[in-house]
Length: 175
Ligand SMILES: [Zn+2]
Image (cartoon, rainbow, N blue to C red):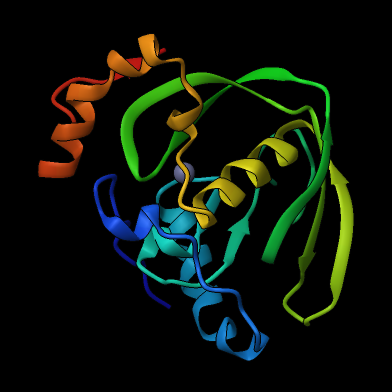
């Protein structure tokens, strides 16, 4: 297994709508490395394009939090419907030192395939629902900070340029 380098804000692959996975077998060789990378970086989710792979899948593990959920692999995930709204602070391994409170739907109905190729439809809420929405965004080329108001986004613009140029901002910020 190997820890893979995390692709940072500014790399075009993070603005790419990732390629649909037709053959589950193509995902399997990357899964262990994806989990190892996520654990090394203390992330709760990692989308394939965050390690440079143009593939529509993500790994998620929030088992270290109070929500007792095991590790998951979500392949070709799509949000079918959603309800409610709530605020939660988010961060991103591709956008270091920045955190921001974002409003998103409270519950999402997601269709995805698991690592055996079985299509599943499940409702997610709480932290797991939040992480899944963050990862589905990544796989569609979207960042959580895209949901910020223009006024708040302006507060991180300089830092984003620094991340794109050097991999990290000179100072962190929580919005
Ligand atoms: Zn992220």
